[in-house]
Image 1 (cartoon, rainbow, N blue to C red):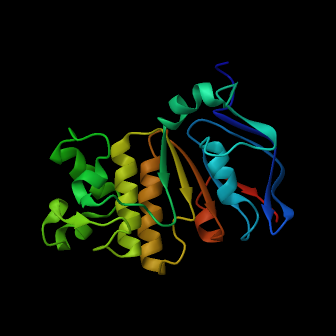
Image 2: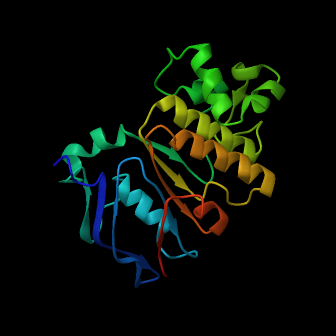
Length: 220
């Protein structure tokens, strides 16, 4: 199995019920992703980009087709182990009610100040922490109160870096951001993807997609 792709999406289809009608969200999609590859899933709203990311993360089950990881079908029995390898950067990052440090080190309270500083630097987020009244001890709310959307995205990249995952899933990471902030977030993601990590991002942003090694185009 050593020659198997990291990830294989095989003839995936997913339908959702809306107003008594069934809508096909993903229609017979197939692609492979190699270890260390950067891949953009590109398409307009309704083309199934976010749904495919959720399927890859094992958060949804397909109506037809399969997701294979390292040559094995993704199932309940191996989903937890697979998700332990993943870091998620969403369009609207979720923050617990707690300190910024706690939000950055979820489940890893023993992370050192040096490790946190390196992650913040990678994500171009040092200035975000520097302006907060109590630095990384500043309390954040569930909606990220105290930080802007772009700042929250950079902190999400730093959190992904601290997680140490080798696969990053990013769902519209630069949506609704101004050009300068979007570039900072994208730069952080691609720095994070360096060193052999795999990056799979869903986007409608052609400039962001062009930075990836490969584009998978989806149609609604």
